[in-house]
Amino acid sequence: QVQLVESGGGMVQPGGSLRLSCAASGIIFRLTTMGWYRQAPGKQRELVTTISSGGNTNYAESVKGRFTISRDNAKDTVYLQMNSLKSEDTAVYYCYARNLRAGHSDYWGQGTRVTVSS
Image 1 (cartoon, rainbow, N blue to C red):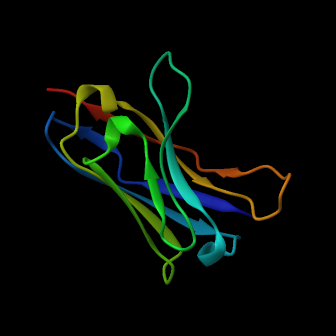
Image 2: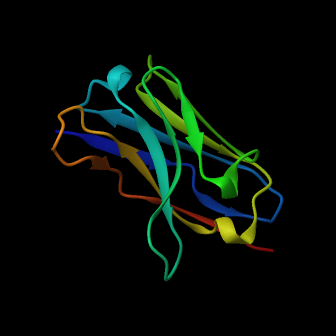
């Protein structure tokens, strides 16, 4: 059974930082592309960033230079370091794991809420 368990969300003031973690189980983590999506109130879920098994990353334009994704294959964990947070970063952040089996559904965590507010 695949589980993605996020942690690290919370409330922070504008300009602050948070680090999200996602611990994975039930997948071959080192071979799996991982990522983070977010969904703000009243908006559709959107891609934030992904990291491939080889460490290649891509970021949404809105977070480039402020957010950093990383992975620890020894711990089956992916991280999202978020700096210089803005109010528009307020959202529920979801951990994502791409299914290695083409045509099968990808995997999602339960989400962790990030609120940026003064």
